[in-house]
Length: 440
Image: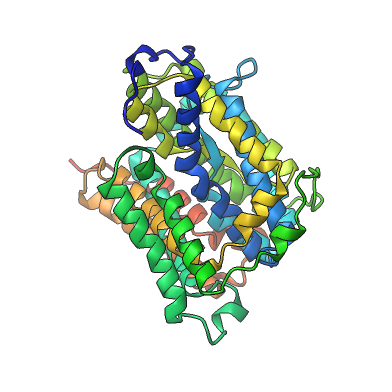
């Protein structure tokens, strides 16, 4: 959506645009993040062995929408010191997918969600000290971690595009078929065309529109089953601790490490929002409040079956594009997400999306995660020291993830961390960055 009349009049977060402007702008924020918000839940549900399109997966999708909206309200409306009170959109974070999918596959969804709750509480308290931890996570470290997340996820995207990531799906005769790839590539092509050859809402919602086109093509091929949609109710029943609570130290440590990286990303998004929308630096109170909201949103979501929430960078771009800094615009977007999360029919419709359609979307999304990591690394001087840190960190993180039997004799907690891709990459990068001398 292009700049609207009077856009420059709403540079203050407390300004309230007329509803005629605020509602479409709020919907635009939802469209820009919707596909990225629900995808992690679909992938983690698959890793946990839940039936694709089944009621449990539908429930997780609902919780992704519902608690993205709730977490966004924590940011925009705020409670006491909680919330930046800025136009920051929250959503389910891709950063946690690798770790949570691994935990869900090996220890169960109950352990994964329990770890989210504990890590969310720890993340919340980071708000009090986040300013003092930023030095541990310079662009070299954060860029490496984001890049590792993207590189870990890309093979998952290819498997989904070809027909699915589960063993029985990869062993099926249809895996890698021309029909599957036709659907997946239609999503990629439509998304790229809209992103780079259109402007405004179509450009911002390029992946979502691509998914819709792929969905319609899959429907024409007879790949869509609406049985779950017909059986889904119109009103959801929210369940606290739907899978119980089971504490695992290794799982908590792994998720907490990603939470720290997520907190640093939120600091960056908060600063970028104030710079893009109001041409000023974020205050300490805004950064602390954003971190508090991040952690609280993650903990509350985990209690009801939702995955961790974080700020969405693509929505920062919308603030810069429209020039509208009003937090009330994003509050409207949050209310739309909450409404979607309360209607199981919507979750079931999303869950009916064939895997090759989703695969086409996540090829773009996961590739963009890796590209975002590379973009952060462009701020780093590529001398021998930093190149060695990049090389060793990625080799440790991705290597152990690809060959988990290499550390099969490690204790359970340590093995979980060692094979998570993200944790070893972050740990090695932080340690090497601290101990290796700077080059003159």
